[in-house]
Image 1 (cartoon, rainbow, N blue to C red):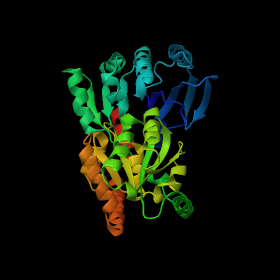
Image 2: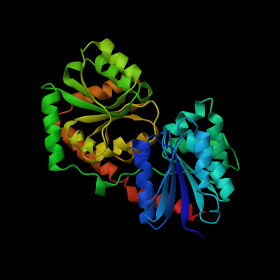
Image 3: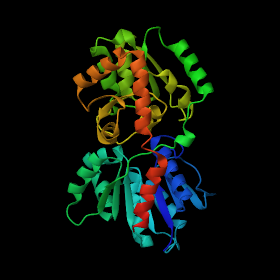
Length: 373
């Protein structure tokens, strides 16, 4: 039997963001374990189709522009005649990939494995476009979720006789993720230039959207009575709701903003943060949670999705129930008032917890799924 899979993903652009980071990490590790992987990246860019060899496989980048269906059909031109080449088609990330991967799997005559990472399920299941998600799930032989909670909710939607539903937690490649002395110097310089004396830095990193809890965090700082001790470091792209809140606040809250940083540039910011906040109302297991914890930064995390699984595995910092405004404010006060030595110890404990979520374990779990087909 062939030891190769076709990996279909749609993140925009393919080199940026958490989905891209996860996809690159998993496929790279799978290749290291001997599984051949050909990738089809469907992007919303405008440009030419690009194909190149990668790690013994192929990477095909297909810009969709305004016509996702045309991009999917164009990608198929490169796959015609490959029946028998693949063991399975893997669907990774978002409705565009979910619309395409079941068709490719049927035309190639192989099983479909759908990997649900987080908001691709949470938003899709309540969307008018839910049929895209449900069609992909029903066509799948295996559905791999990133959290136990998600697995428990996917199963009842599909009923008896549906696909096998399993959980594979997110991972982090610690061999590629470590703070250097140069990073620490840059972080210290940023903090000295940006953060008022006597303030603790609460980092909010990634998609800075209201639905990711950004406004909930800002409101919690205001409501906690501890605004004079907190500096909120926003790193990522602001949506309109967050910008409107900051404008209405009129500068009373201490905050700073930097646009999206490459994940390795983030290593020069994380050491400057006293805690990294993950106040999402719903989520999978964001890469930044593991990235911050691994370098010893405690988390201020909602107990939802994979974050709840992470907290169940060991200490990670300060937790609260997702959507609980009072609980978020209480956890925030705890982080701001925690003695420095205790905060440092919490960071060390968080690093030990995160060490159990390594990329090699993650890849071995996915390899076992494909080997079992």
